Every structure is written in structure tokens, then in C-alpha cells.
Image 1 (cartoon, rainbow over the protein chains, first blue to last red):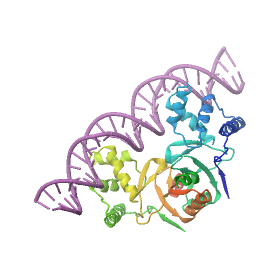
Image 2: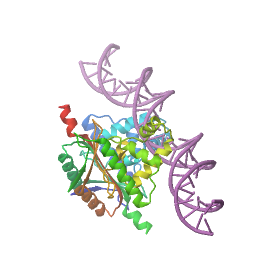
Image 3: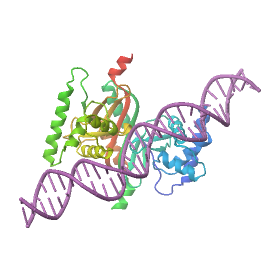
Image 4: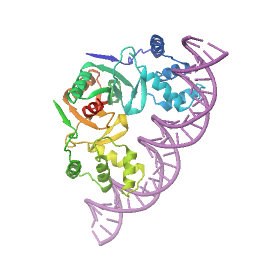
Length: 162
Length: 162
DNA sequence: AGCGTTATGTAACTATATAACAACGATGAG
DNA sequence: CTCATCGTTGTTATATAGTTACATAACGCT
């Protein structure tokens, strides 16, 4: 079974989308006793500024624009926290971060990243996970963390290029 | 079906292992009319110095030690060539490169990377590929390239830690 | 208030990767 | 053989990504 969470192509109210993510983050952190401080919240919001992975230094610049000039380390610390809490995923092949639409359930990230528009669709396919786990088991390998990233062309971009 | 290529834990004659890789590279490049120049050959050899992913700058240092001092760009260019020819894979989660034991057949890399010893085992599991392809198809996503990297603990290290 | 823990600030630094342009060198056409 | 061409390498500078070490501040508990 595949669970997909992607930006609806049309009629996507991103303001609502971001608000939802921030709300979920608040609730989650509260329930865990984790502190979603002002900086962490702002970084999370900036990560969610779109559905495309955003680099640490891009976020740094965003913050400067918003009048909050901080050091790289500050952003990295906030990102580390957010990743730890499962609120954002890191896209290894882009050195960038993206908001997780479903932070309540721990899961490995699986992403389709479009080379044209840059949007990343998060998948969560049990077959993929199962196949990877089976391979690891065959090798006697204990899994900490898996990275699945697919680079290519999304439907929208393929159509608009045609 | 899973095809595995890993360093034999015991009795692994690495000299032979590297020679084999270089031989295959020569043959492959010759058959394609691609030029395996001295630099490219040396970089390939250095990538193959072990079965763990090696960073571009580590290779740069290796070359300096061997008396061939070059600029980063030179190494990156050689690596780009080698990746293009399928002779080495890039491990995104480590910003590092590893030799491919089976360059003759195009394939996405799938890796188990041990957090202790750093060794990377290349898998090539059809179920994993199939599951990913199916997901992409479901989304109308055209695949260019897939990255599958599993971080964890290999059998040997788990046993020796026990 | 006092104390330990967690979060943030500051600065310098290391690591990874690319840009722009010049020069070299193998190969093939004339 | 010579020249033109194209791919490869050299050189320098720069962009991007991430970390180390240490100081300070805020919170949360007793």
C-alpha cells in the first residue's frame, strides 16, 4: 500500500497547508515535552515556504530578509532538532530539507524529486520499505536509517514540456 | 532476486580485486571509445583503494601523496567521467564515491553502509527497483536516477561489538 | 534564589563543489 | 605532414555546505 502526500496541483491553499504543519508541530512538541522555540518555529515555517527542498543557507538568507540575522550554526541546530522530531526530512542528494506532512508516525522518507520544478513528493510505500528491509536482513545488516530518493520528471512538468 | 557484491570478509585479495576493476574499466572504455586517461585511471584506482566510499578531497590528498598534485576540479572532472561511465557510484549521504563491481550493466546503486567500519556493500535487488518503479509509475513520474542508501551496522561489526 | 540543563550567540574554520578562462594534446581531414 | 578541432587538463578564484570551540542566556525545577 502506498500513502502519498503531495501538494495538490490545483487549488492548493498553501497558507492553510503551512498553518496545518505548524499546528501539528506545536501539538507534537507539546505532547513530547520538546521545545518548539521561536527560532525553530521560524525555520520550520521557512522550510515549509514551498514543497521543494530548501537548503540551510537559503533558510539563512530568508531569515536575514525577515530581519532575523543568524549564524549558519543556528539554522543547522534548528534543522537538527526538526529532523530529530520528524518534522522535516533531509534530502541527501540535494543537501536540502523539506517539511514532513505526517510527522506523527515515524517513517523513513521516500521522495520523488522533479528536476524541472524542484518539487518533492513524499511517498511512503510499504513494498519499498519491505524490500529494503528484506535485503538488509539477508545480509545480516541492522538498519538505522534509509534514504530513498528518485530524481526525474513529474507529471505536470512532463506535460508542460510536451 | 538479489545480486550482491561485497568484499569477502576473509581471504580477500584486494590487489587482485583492484586489478580486476581496472581491467574491466579499460575494456569497457575501449569498447565505448571513451578515453580512460592517466588521471582518470589513477582516480579510479584510488577510489578502489578500499571498499569504503572515498571523498573527492581524500582522493585529492592521495594524489598529492603519490606526487601528482592537482586541483579539486581535476578530481571532480575525473569522478564525473567515471560516474558517467558507470565505473563508480556516488554515495549521496556521504558525499563520497565507491567503485562499482559490475560496470557492464547499467543499474541504479543500492547500498548498505556500515556506520562502524564504513564499508559499503552494493546490492542490486530487483524487488526494490520494481517497487520504486511502480511508485513512480503510479505518480506519473519519469525516473532519471534513483538513490537507495541504507545506513546501519554490518554483520561483522555487530558481532565484534557484542 | 540557586542550580543544572538546554538553547542561542559569536567567530573562525573545514569540507565540498563549481565558474571562467587559458593552454595543452590527441585525432582526423586535407 | 600540418593544421584545425575537440576533448582534456591546468590555474585561479569563488560559491556552497557544515563544524568546532567556547561564551552567554533562558528555562525549569527545587
